[in-house]
Length: 639
Image 1 (cartoon, rainbow, N blue to C red):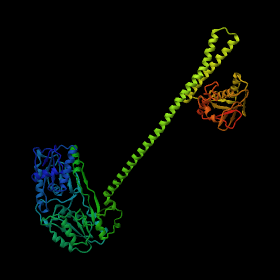
Image 2 (cartoon, rainbow, N blue to C red; image 1 turned 45 degrees about the vertical axis):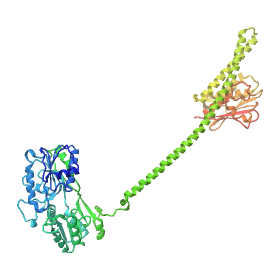
Image 3 (cartoon, one colour; image 1 turned 90 degrees about the vertical axis):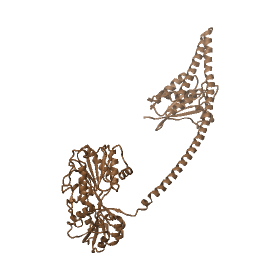
């Protein structure tokens, strides 16, 4: 049968094509450069169908473009074996010349043996890939032989020169010796091995392999229960006659001498015939309900791997490397049978076996149920978390809304306060600026008009100069407040002798003062260097001394400096009218004056507070002093 590379069938479509065509082969118009698959059994039988389906799917996925031809030998019981070799020869002759395939795949033991038994290969240059075959085989005879008495020799693919054109594939290796050692470990008193095989090529080839391997164990007797000379009923009778200390080794059992097919039912009948005799399986026959266990091949589907090997051959057809892979065996034990027979597995040493029929742990048995419950609980927890999230989110939004409302009220109050301050600022500034300007403009006009004595002119000039200085100081104070509040002032720190600075300030103030007040400076230091902004420190001391001078008549004003561990304390003390208790904090606010009729805009102390705060100090009115006023401020000592 040819399957075009334009059509990639799945398993169902493959079955439909097989059932709609003739059982031996289906030919397309062009068979040249194709892939030829020769199957031992009808392609609808599992695992043949599974291997073919996976091969077709993977071959086309990997970019294979050749047509695929499927031929079927329709092998059944071993009694038909004389015809297999002839069928294989006819098929090989059929695909020669123009129809010669690019590669050939052999599926199953019968096709494998029929190919190996050909004396002269008709396709010497066609690479062969094998699957579902055994490393150990028997060669089919050229002449008829008595089937029941024929004891063929087992041959090894690797050591007996059977390679022909085989390039790659997958082979099973039945470990007879390993199973015998397993039996002797678990049942040391065993002296007889009863091997069961059926009337099929697999049974006969396995029996030949067992006979060959048992020569390694001369202390053990071998009883052959052969399906070629027994029916299921005579086998049962033989099993009942087995001597003590016998172990059963199961090969295959599908067909008996009458070509009757018995699969699982036959094994159950044999198990009931000798339930006390320990049974082991060389294959999977009887495993899972009868056999204790055994070392057996890891049976699985190789279709995709076959496709990959075919693609490799197509890419490198001249390669001489053999890529035949031996399928690994594994030791399997039936947990229920082991427990029922009370077998001690400690004799096997390190645990290198696997259990079947082992009771599933509670978690494994109810895994999906528990996972469902867990998923439901997670869903509930997530739902709760989402609900809590939205609850707290709503609460947070509500709190934020209330906070925003409070902040809005505060902002509204601040805006109103700012508006009030702006109004107050404009009122104060208009008054403070108008007063000196009026004096400047008025006396300037008087000076311009003439007719004044020289003494009067000097007096008018002094008045204009005094009011000009007052107006300039007012503008400077406004600019200072604006810069300090917007943090646009950068202090320039440098080392300076503050003792000398204080003395210089007092000397300059004493020179320009217009009062009878006496100024004094006191400190326990003759000299002290402080890292500070000299101009700003001088501005604060001058402002405080100027204020003290303004509110003191014929009194004493004292500047004092005290040095502590981490800061320097300055204080200005006067004997004037003092500051009322309720106005100790207000005096540092802008436009605050003790006497509304006194000169000045009420910005001096506010500027002092902003400067002191910027270098990290404090300024306050000393509440313990009552003979006037004392204002104290600090300056941190910096490295």
